Figure 1: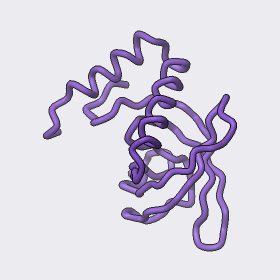
Figure 2: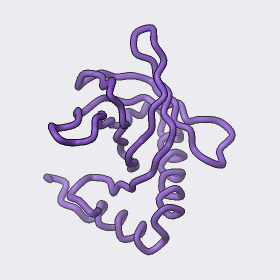
Figure 3: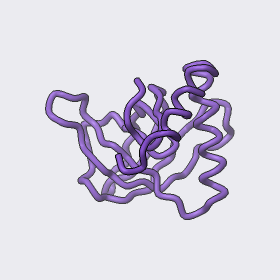
Figure 4: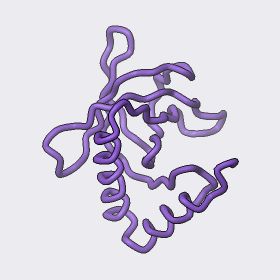
Length: 128
């Protein structure tokens, strides 16, 4: 599970709502990190597309409304979907969201594995 990425990610499924043209879609995440998520969908948006989506988190009264950019589609043979990088305009919103992601990871993976995953991501070479 530990990869050479800027942010450690965990296999957490959350509901995602977004709009493409005049249609609304509801899909689910395959995994999430502080920096982005992978949305399982057969209706991928083109790379470089920026869009607003709502991410529903358990035990939270309202969904996060986030800006994202499609950074990659699924490769051949992979589960259909798109890799999303979060785009932040508000530092406080980013901090609140990152805390929530850490809590989700800890509930899903446990404190020790989450700590190792986040520590590994923080120690990685920024040139990677």
